[in-house]
Image 1 (cartoon, rainbow, N blue to C red):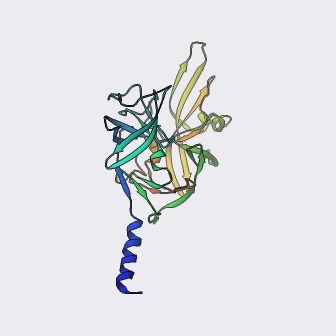
Image 2: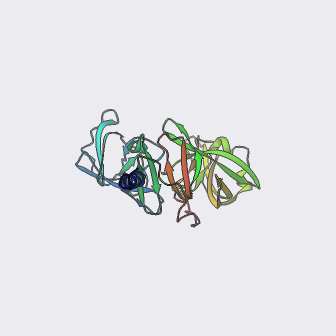
Image 3: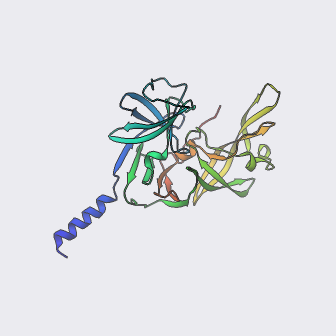
Length: 281
């Protein structure tokens, strides 16, 4: 093979493994990812990236106008979202969905549909790839995709005993983890975890729900181990937590690369890996 052609192929093979798109983001003090966007070329909105949904939404508490998103029965189809140099078409928005602090709404994983994408917390950016980039230092973790929601399994070491649980990747929750009622029931977490705070609310019928925050000594994701993880769970008459959450305070401790089929995610520790955990009110 001629040397010039060989050199061209080598350069080309290196080039296609680089990001085809990059999208800058900022992280709020509540651990949420925000991107600056323009919707339908008119409405400038700060949207929180929500990994637990595919579509987008507008918050009733937004600070900026979204007059050029036209809703019918709470849904708006066919919208254009511009983020940096990238234009995304046919984006569906839902109306009146609460979102994170400082955000006017949410944007989901649909903008990366069918593509490999990475969340780079070290450099505050998303990266989109045509082919899988270098995975040096990364570990593969199986993903379960349930109607666009992505779950991974992790081991919770409770009272010295490892217990596996499936966690929904939930970038809208500022804390570490929240346990589902199905996981928490019968495990005496209020006795086996160090409790750091709790809050009780009652409805008009006198039924109560108590949110308890504690510290999980060890959380194992793949071969990586996080220590003293902030963990929440619910007790009382009202229990509505159907899924366990892996919140933004855990997500930011890794850099993530998702395959195009959403069957595997590759993770490695980020610069936040050993940072103190966010204190939930």
